[in-house]
Length: 269
Image (cartoon, rainbow, N blue to C red; front, side, top):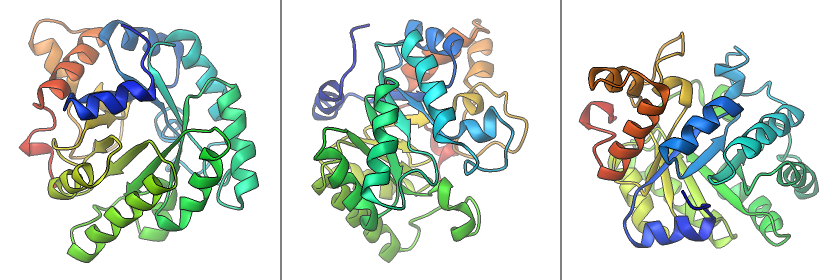
């Protein structure tokens, strides 16, 4: 697999080729993803829940994100590596965001991801003007879980859906080159992908976005609590096909994303 860069992801959108992304936090799994041909890795603050056992992503620190980023860079440098700016590391000021983003870039990130609507676009503009690539994140915002009252589907109301599109456009205008949309109806995911020139990666946003991302632990079926509706256990499905391996699960995921088979109707809101 040749090294993936943001230019490759932009070309994939233009060519209607789906982008396969997964979260990853450690070297061993990153090596399996490399063999499976994962296009992009998100070093997500979801590690707070699936690795550290917290009830949300909020306790994760910048130092922890740096540590896990370094693990991935050493193990799958060919993937395009996006890293979450953790809660509290960027909301206060543009300068604060730049310090945190710079630390992640020095650790090997090729893009940082931040959550929020149009009000956060000024952070995107500040970072991109200083050479730091940015991925936006709209829809369900895990870092705002207490503000929105839990992990709830977003964008069912037409007015809210329209605002999500405007929020995403604001980040694109500010220089964002990638967008994640989480937990929205499929028609909203599709509308975002049509409205934006940059790739839109869905998680619980239907099959009509430019690509998909899942939390690795969820798609391997090793998360102990309730599994979201939009998740498929690819380890179990690969075992049914005669390959009960982690590499097989990752390859199956890549194939189904590329073919538009995943997510299916049973995964939609």
